[in-house]
Image (tube, rainbow, N blue to C red; front, side, top):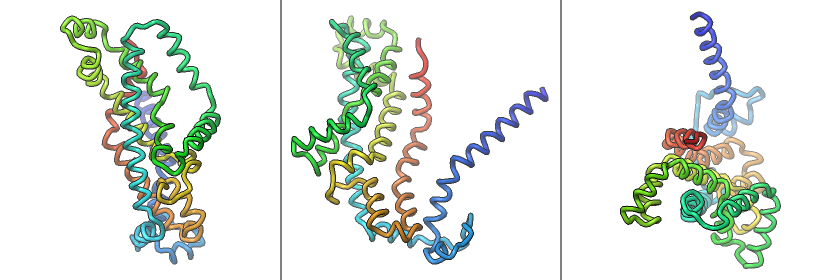
Length: 277
C-alpha cells in the first residue's frame, strides 16, 4: 500500500514538474505582453511577475500592422480549407472502408505510399503548379494544395472500418443509399474522429507558414504567420518585444480556446483511432 502511494506521489510530482516546463513559455509570453516597454527595457534581471500590467502593447500590435486583416485572411483560409478537406476525405475514407471495387487495396497502398514523399518535394511541385496557373497571391492558390490529406483519409478509414458490417448490410436491406448510410450512420458514430481531424486541420491551417510565405507577397493575402514575420522583420518586433508578444498572444488564443472546447472529443477520437475491433 505504501509502495503504491509513493509511486502515485512520484508520478504526480513528475507530472507537475513537466506541466511547469511545458506551460512556462506561455506564461512568459503573456507576462511579457503586459509589461510596459520602458520597464521591460530597464530589466537587467528578468522579472517573473509585474505589479503594473498594461494593455497598451495589444493596442500597438493592432495599429502598427494590419493584424485584423491578417486575422480575417487566416479565418477565411482555415474555414474554407477545412470544409473542402472534409468534403474530399470523408467520401474517400468511406469508399476504402465499405465499398468493394477492383484494385481497392492496391490503390489504398499506393495512396499511403505518398506519405513517404518528403514535404519539401511536394511544396516545390505545388509551387510550380500554382505559379504556372497564375494563382499566386490568391486565396485559391493558398487553399488548393491543402484540401487533401492522406493521413486523415487513413485515420478516418480506420475509424469507419471499426463500425460493424451488420449495420451496413441492414441499411442496404432497408433500401438506404451509400450516401445516406455514410451521413446518417457512420458520421454520427465516428463523430469523435471527425472532430479530431477537424480540429487538427484547423490548427494546421492556422499555424501554416511555409506555403503562405511562398505564394503570397502582397499584404492583402497575408496570414497571421506572415504577419508575425513581418512584425519581426520590418515592424516593431526587433525593438518592442512586449508588443511583439502581445501579437503572439492574440494569435495563439483562438487555438487554445478551440482545444479547451473540444479536448474531450479529441481524446476520445485519438483513443478510438488507436483501438481495433
